Image (tube, rainbow, N blue to C red):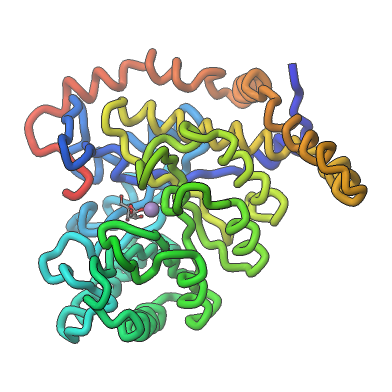
Length: 388
Ligand code: PSV
Ligand code: MN
């Protein structure tokens, strides 16, 4: 069995992956959203479910909120509820993609009333962050156009910068703004923040508290995402990851499921660039579970990230540098592949047991009866869903 050195275990012990509250609600496609027995009816129940993931893995110490989906009357009570369950409230995600007013844009809109409304929504999100103790405000914009000529792309970029400046000015000393990019959808001709370069250009002129968020599902097929990871780390601007995986578009599937090798390559650059256990770089999931049970889906996801992190930490850096320096093309590649093909699961299971965690978190959760309990208890009310 492969053993993991004390140095590697120390690194793994520091790993925390934030869970999205919306992963516990129902989700689906434009064709059908399937309901699941036991689905949370409010943010309190979502956090209770998220705490289960942390309970069996010790890998998920915080939960991201989406506003207005997770609006509550009293955020101090929500915060206490989370803390009582052993987790924290994390990143606050704004939402300017479900209001009629934002049909043609929000932070980029030429109508000053609508742009003001969108800016104010972000200021409200920061008020919520003050109450929840959250550090990061994550902004993803559904803005763009469908047809050439439809919009003045330059004017929108200028208004975006002005809007972001106003939001940035309201951030507290310890708070940050992270700007997420996506190359398409819901707009198809142009997106106002389509790529890491645009996000970088926008946040770089704001200041040190503004960073880029890299969602692994938001790139064209074939994009070398690990190159972007390397570059943003090099520039000191990689603020967070939204992890998920994709076969076709923004599939939001379980991280590491479509292309485990890609996740390995990304984490290898994270390790190489000093992004692991670096407080500047937040690891988060941004996923939905359309057909599988949600809590096990999230447990599987954080375990996938942990397993690939362990493999990335196994890369023999000295051997790699030696092979690279000697222009040993295949030798260098072999060093990487050796780490990738190493099965770290038995060693991780053993290590988990040594920390009073279940060797197999998936099995332990299944045996706990929690799924049946929530299915029995959560009767009535309206099940939460992506978009509600
Ligand atoms: C957009 O596709 C996105 O990745 C953003 O992070 C949103 O806030 C999230 O998905 C909602 O599911
Ligand atoms: Mn995302």
